[in-house]
Length: 471
Ligand SMILES: Cc1ncc(COP(=O)(O)O)c(C=O)c1O
Image (tube, rainbow, N blue to C red; front, side):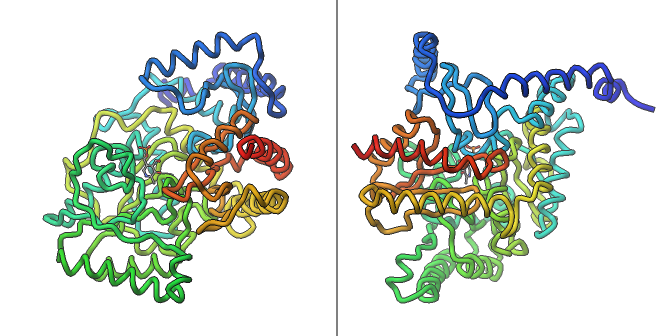
């Protein structure tokens, strides 16, 4: 017995057509071999497209970047015919690289469904197949058992916030790290520790900020233990001042926007233990770090899964989710919404999860660790070659973990970092910045689509851009 829906997906005619389209995309994109400048014949049209895009949203684009819809691996073609290394992949979204045959196939197969969007009221099977896979992977090393699907990271975080608040009601305060980023809804900009994101907005959430790990401060204080003890005492102080008022501690275990900062494991564990002792749920926001540390989940990288009550993922997973333990499962009515997402989000999200789970990416010998080592090697060579571009500052000049890569020229001075990112863009590579001072060049490259031979070519472009920025 079968359904008509299944018979469409399994139809040999459909399969042949999809195979033919995937092969055609591969044949056409095979011509993409390395960075190249824009096609002068497309310049006028492109400039008009960029101007129109800025006009439609009321603000110029940060980079004059409009993709053509094609690329190959870590290389992307723009609508002006230029080709660039894509080292930031939409803040890590296009992790499998451009025009990846697995992604093209998943997108084509998704297009066969009768509707684009699935909802909480009426749904096909795709959202739950994705959610089940996510739960399977998360539950290997944590008590997480359920996933509520959302269409953005901010909405996953809003859901996580509600789950924690309902569980601990009437607790109404949040413990959060300094310099955390949580998304752009009103409450997330209240909690997220970035002045620019709150500009002109009311603060609608009481937050007690806790310092994020700082190895320089720890050295100055006489060691990690002293620093950790002082920070834990500060958290205990908040708990004593507001007994039973903290609904959760939200932790980006590795900070993304805040500057690709990797904390001391003991600090995280001590914080989590303190939360457990005081009935404060631990909410792990892995929206930026998921998938790209040296294990699939950052809590696995630190071996701290047992403490996690609520977790959010997004970006790389395409479809976003708030996950929680059996104990944190909220009462009916708390979580819902018209959309869970589009079929294509779930299909591509599943393809990403499959690739990550089975492609040899994790562990000390995994691809994320190896590419990070190669990035570090080339960064250090560049620093040795051009020491004047890399003055000392209060931080490491090369840092991050796995596919989260950070390089800091010009002492981390914001205007110079922004100018450097823009010069590198002109030279042929797209990257971004992070941090709240010092600022850093931020890379989230499509590791699964990179080969080790790409790194010298990428660093040629970075060197050219930095030379331009250094004047
Ligand atoms: C740690 C973290 N949480 C939440 C978000 C918000 O995700 P979205 O932009 O999909 O709403 C981001 C986005 O940068 C993030 O890095």
